[in-house]
Length: 111
Image (tube, rainbow, N blue to C red; front, side, top):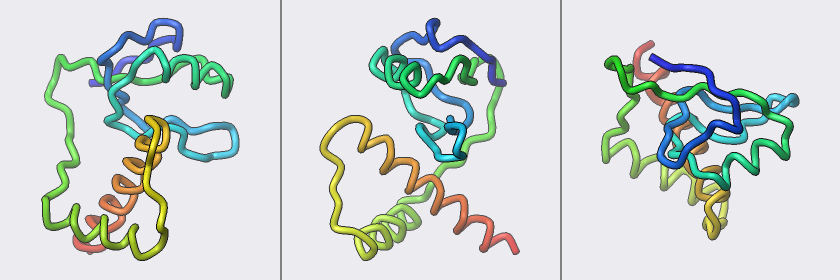
């Protein structure tokens, strides 16, 4: 189960329960990102006031990605771009891309 907290209350190690989007619908941080105080500063810059974090009290639905699917996603991203993440926020963006493509792939498999 997730709980809503104020950005000021972020503690290192908390995990985002849902993707955080800005007012333009752009994903700033993906679900599953482990938070730090740097993320709090980043979110304040975007005027994000509250977020949902995993409470860890109940079994939550996890979207585990198999190693095979992860490799397919990484190859797909490599074909589309020559970009390599260098700083933490870029690594988070990379995780968003992997999460998005995994979700897209799992939906196409279920149909």
